[in-house]
Every structure is written in C-alpha cells, then in structure tokens.
Length: 86
Image (cartoon, rainbow, N blue to C red):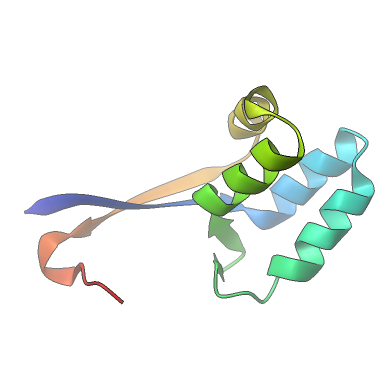
C-alpha cells in the first residue's frame, strides 16, 4: 500500500557540474560546500525540492527544467507503513 509520498533526489556532483558548464562556477562551489555534508544530502544525492528552490530563486523555472533534463534524478516511493512525520 502506497501513500503517495515520494523521495526525489538529484546527484549533487552533476548539479554542480551543470552549473559550472553554464558559467556559474561560483554558485556550484557554494552549493557543493553548503550541501555536501548537509542532512538534505544522502549518498551524494540532494533533495530535488531543495535544488528547485535554489535554481528557480537564482535563475528561473526554465533553468530548472533544463537542469532536470540533464541531471540524474532518483525517485523512490515510501510505503504507507514506513511513512512518518518528523
């Protein structure tokens, strides 16, 4: 039984590489420094909603859509019996 909760994550190294390739190396460095060991990051994968907030805030929705097409995103669904509120 699934409750609709999903955990979407993007590869932090690829996100920073994409930013660097777009000419935003300083932004990539700041993001790597801020999130490499942050609780939002697990096994090198950062929460997608966090990345979206940063990219849309710094650039626009279209930039995030381009990033989303070029960077690995992992999606996992959490079963109802495992979901909990922190």
